Length: 551
Image (cartoon, rainbow, N blue to C red; front, side):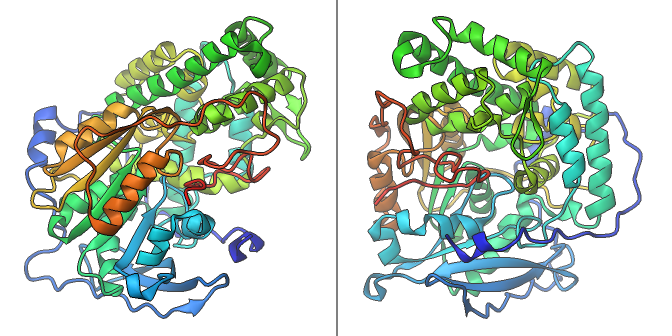
């Protein structure tokens, strides 16, 4: 347990809200205009504006051999000498100074996960070659964790939103979802209005470049997983000559994410439901190991959602777990891949028996709200949704219909994780000055390693293929497996990443890894090594980004 696990949740920064501007329901640009915008990266400073000062890092011991510091960076890079925001950073120096090659930036998924916790929680599981060769470095991006975290809904309001949500929404669900998203947006303005325009990924990439300089590195060495892959992509696009090595695992299609968000959302819905469908197919084929469904796991799952909506299960802390809770937990835990399938079967059986010790019946808690709020806000700043409620309704309805297992709860639920952002983002009232709107080609960069998992429920495999083609100098590594990301879950992929980051040895184009751990024959009592989230490994812990036991 790290020192941060003993500490209470960090206080979330409350800033005076700015005036609410009217929502203009008009088109925001054509696809042709978006393509044209990719020709040149936006530069917020004029040629006469002095560059932002490089932060000074004053390191202090923060237990376990880690050093912590704070870095002051511009709040608004259009005014680089103006107000600042403080970022929390952590590092652990290279275990073998004689082998040290520099600093390895590690960026977790999200948006909304703590980079400080990511490094601290995963350091001991990193391969020796990484720990020997690099100072391992992480930080909480602006607006997240210890870096001036903002809030939208408070804990009580978020608890009401997820408690009221349904696993099988009714016919009036769209209107209610739009109204609740508008309330969420207003809460963001009221509680953190002055920070909202400045949390987009362009400014995050600029922060990384200042931190690179503060650490004395000529070029960036970087591992980013899931949303961390998009941050790395934007960095490479803005600063291609400053790239030494970028490993982008569970990669985003950056163009669809930024310019065609409905297309991006649709693929994510289908990937999630596809993973759930393959699990249920396995469950039907191996009822002895799965233990759920009595010969018809699909029918049993649909009935369980409705039963929990009609009669929620009381939880140990006095809350309630309904059908939405079940879907929400499955959305994250299906990311574990085949190794967790027997555990999912056992947890579904417990839920069917109304046993509130099932990890699928844990409603989102205040710890998860600290992740979910930034997750919505950052994507609303980054993405360019058309401002049309009619188009929103068409797409939300199509997503719910096209992904019937988990999609309806996501499509019509409150603003939480990726699938539930459109209702908020279409109505987003704050400015987006920190949104990246340039090219994603990264012309002139060093070779970049892109990694995709064929059955990834969170970042679809085709996104990794698309990114590898959009970047001018990239190689695609494929992991044939279920689950989210590859590093730490595949010895083959892990070795490829280590060889690339340490020695710049790029795997051959078209390399495929096929070494996923298969489902155990019985439900394990503890989570197997290699799982990427911490639900089983850490009991009631919320979304904890892990890279698994890769030593």
